[in-house]
Length: 69
Image (cartoon, rainbow, N blue to C red; front, side):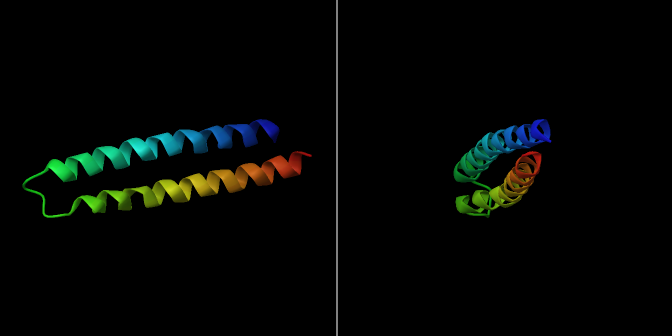
């Protein structure tokens, strides 16, 4: 249980880095796109699934850590 807890915690950290990369790339692409009709702030909507996955990973990680004690 402790190993699974650590793995989920590290997955949450990796997802947070991927979220930053994805949002920054989408924001930059939308900001410099002359043919796009969407404003640049729409790129921040792509963080919603990442934030949900990070929250789920952290919650399960803390539950498994608590059960291992």
